[in-house]
Length: 245
Image (cartoon, rainbow, N blue to C red; front, side, top):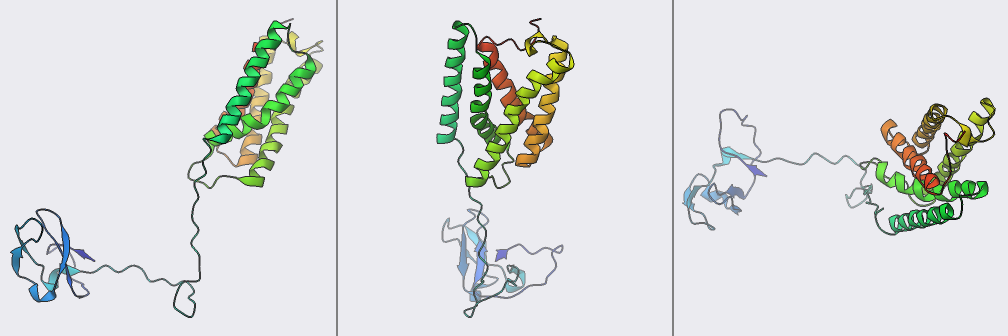
């Protein structure tokens, strides 16, 4: 129930009820008084300043909308409200992802001092780094107002997208080399490498949007998070991605 001051601009369609709700204009304390004091003036029980109890004609009662949901024999709604659960992505999962990336960083430095990463190590690195980077990327780019994927469904989507992301590096490594008859992807010019990278980034963006139902910019950020991250680790490990010819 809301008590308002009388005003010629407020329609007087009121529902009377007892007792009367009063709000002190000085201290804003709310309390109830008997309807026998309607229209009278007296001290506020909180701040002791004088206030006037609204008359019945000045009282407005606002009722909640009627609940038309199905009821049981006791008159209670049989529908159970759906509660949105907050999912905490910032603890164990991110610690694991950070640990994997840090370990990959140390391995990349070790491979650089060892003379570079063999092809099999490059392939394994692209595959093994995909799941933690895909998972971590999703925690950052997902729409916060929507219910997130979790459990088995989240795992399956992460694995599917991880396979697609890892395969993008195979496209980068073999398609331009085949088209331009190069001995390896390292012989690509920077122009060809840039176009190829944009192409796989576009494919990765589409795959991310389709897998996690993201917006375009979120899908782009998700794919870039993996591709740029693995590219930097490859360069750190001494892998020549372009311009070596």
